[in-house]
Image (cartoon, rainbow, N blue to C red; front, side):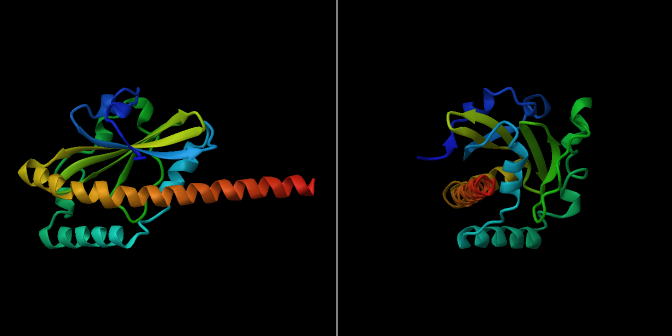
Length: 204
């Protein structure tokens, strides 16, 4: 079963990002299942995803190619980024979101935008796109889903061509690898938690 969801799974939720970035195109939506999770585990879920770099060699190779191309073609120059080519969405945040940015994400081009108890967003900008990675915490029958939505504003013809070119790699390689890594990490977390609980119970 695919963990890619219909766009309505994001569009129909009352996320704050709708009011902040209404003109961004919703590229796709993915679910990272978190069985056994509770309503307060959103920060843990974000940390679990954030702290896992690409582990499959195809994903590592694709990211290495992307950064190499960006360096050669100047896609990631400072003048193409936030505050230069495009203003940061932080300038649009309502007062109650302005001081809620989550921790920085190491080894990525993303900048935290805001983080609430069940929703968070990060943004990036380069010569090809202005993009948002949005995360939501959604209850399910056996726990929660960490929902990830990708929203973009392509930069002209280059941006549209770039998004079209990388789509097969995103859908067939990058996101499936992220999901496998997530599933392994969450199972490990649950196993450790169960082991700790059992050990505590035995001691008492």
